[in-house]
Length: 260
Image (tube, one colour):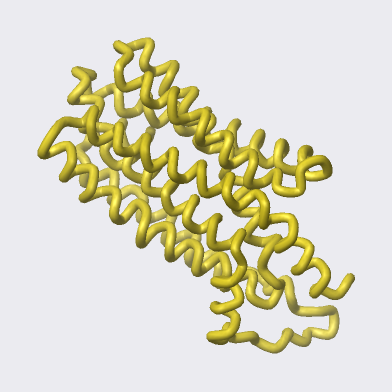
């Protein structure tokens, strides 16, 4: 939202300039954070380095693998939409001032949906052990027809469908990340998240930028965003495939973790 406003008034370069100071501030602030693992006696825990066997363990954890694939597809979709939405809105005849509107949609729909998705995953877990994947998968599958309908609906009514599709698309944020923590042993939990982040960005949004640009360049933006809808569908299916494994993988980690 801010990027669109800055672009309209100061140019796109300033949108990049102005994100540097907050990043530098947060980076410096991290140096003053206390390690929460340091006990009252001031002793730090022994540093653990992930081994090849740890990575193989994650690769053998089926719910983790399905989750990474689903998140990669979702990141492709979300990253691709976010990167190319200005070009898409121009293709649909919208003025440059429409880009900040998309920012508002992301902020409002994304925030509310993220909170609701986490609450739903927790609430349903007692009845459906695979609830975190169920909420993630159903959410993005509901988003697919709404997103496709948006492509063929005139503005301003298309904004309503875009808001709804973004809302359901972001339901997975809390549940899918919680699932990563639940199926990874504490000693390799940070490794599990780091590997997941590397995969979803290297194979997700990084590939989305040139892929969608290529498709749109040879066809049009409607076709390119229809391809995004297909990727969203794939994402939802993999989360639903993983539902059957999530409970067992979570129970295995809980059984192997000493009670505090």
